[in-house]
Image (cartoon, rainbow, N blue to C red; front, side, top):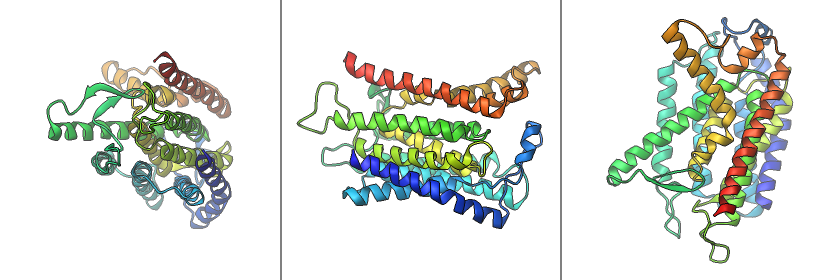
Length: 360
């Protein structure tokens, strides 16, 4: 538990102190945000605000986790390294997207084709590697079973190892692409995606610490409802480091934002969320914990689908937070209320997680 607290504390301090330094660097280089012309007019005042703040979140996470490992003498596990790889890899894709926007002075960066290709490449490497590196108990970081709160009976290897591997890679890439794009869509108001991510990753600290205390790999504590997660404490350290990084970054990202996380941050956070859900064997539970992300994605899907079918719009603008903006809600009001909704989803998810263990 000490390693978890140290990782989160290091990361928080690094993000809190490092963000203003990065802001000054971005201002000096004139790396500012470009605003889409079809967005809410209130956003035009944000033009030129430094972006790519996700670099700070990623750096603080990695250094915070490394600091916690060094201080406590923990040897890095394959699970922690895989989640960090996924976070950094998708962060690089997002960085390229942000850099193209800045260098070409436009609101569009990488084309959808190249962005999905980048996400897919990182996702494939992650998925294949997650089924390697068995530990002394012959457990790999991930399994080929689809999971809810723990692995279910839905085994992707039902038709053989090769087909199972292909199906797992497709499933993992679906989750990675879905969650990274979900956080990206949520990142539309000052502090919204950062605050929601903070709460969601905080929930994963609780989940993974509980799994560590009830692991099937311990002869002393293993019980009938133990968890098969390979490295739960290491995953808790990563989740704590991300939570701390979001805490520190939010100080500067809250309205009026001094810096935006950009696609660098949103894709990285979405990838880390997907990675934690896969390696902690909570893939379906993640849809409850990240319920607000799901709602925002669905608002976009409904808007596009309904418009294509009828030529009419359900919302004044999608994603959902822009609908409320155009309805006259203040930006801060929307953000705080969405944080509250996210907190309710997280409380429900943690309640389901704990309730399943008690009921068992």
